[in-house]
Image 1 (spheres, rainbow, N blue to C red):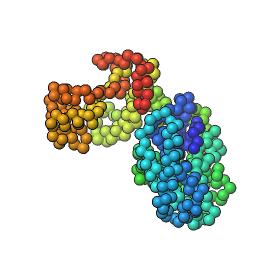
Image 2: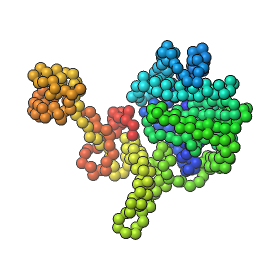
Image 3: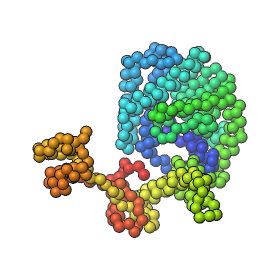
Length: 412
């Protein structure tokens, strides 16, 4: 699957269409993978491998019924193939991802690939010449300067082109209607892989298998092209040239420069509150709460940026990095259980399903008894690095580079 990124990527279109100068600023910020983005990339890799294999085998392996009933041997074959693809992907990344391979394989194959495949079979019943394209390359530069991308899946049949987008995360449900990313995908498919077809309708489907959510929308081609001409192209040109005004909003959430954006900071500082009277009305509270979501997101990104700078040797004046709170742990619970049993304690007093918490065990044994019996098993891991004001009594971490090494897998 493609790994390069356009300045005006379809996935960020909601942001650069609303705040046109942000795209150029973001392009100067190096991309940083997170556990979430790498997990999504792994799921897409598995989906691509499975759909391509299903296409290669097609009727020989998967009978062309509208509703796909998978024989167990076929499902086992796909799971093995997908498992190999997932393991290959995990070997390529430096972050230790907490992925359940069985869950990912089942989710991607049964809730995404199966959905696309059944739509493809339905399309073939309506049009024997229907085609399914996996990771189809999109033609976007006619409307978006130097832009490119790919759609997870595209089905072309009769007078219709259908585009599909797999979103693997557990975040909020995403709606397809008026979704600019999906409209860009549909436009790119219309002008790319479907350009020689007489297409009259585009269909857009977002599949979020871990949320059991599917959202679809269809649009006549003439309306899609009118949107592309009247809205998309002018805003894309402005964004590519770095022109226009900075406009804060909920689209700022994943912006790479949001922590340092002055427009967003001013928006946060100037919540619209009528100064008449001493207390806010319910209506005013509602308006502030609506704006507060953007403000909270910005503050979180600002704190994370400042922490990242400090850990990289560039502390923000007036702040320092300290070791955050850390809870004691019993490092060898099996040995602790054996010790308690040998001391004559009833199993129910120290076990639920696993060993009870340290607080519960101290109540059972008393602090001295706990220290005598189980003290050797207790460890306290390093606390998560935390940004605080210099007046905080906790000592600053002595060696910033040591902190970077110790916490290199922490997402901030």
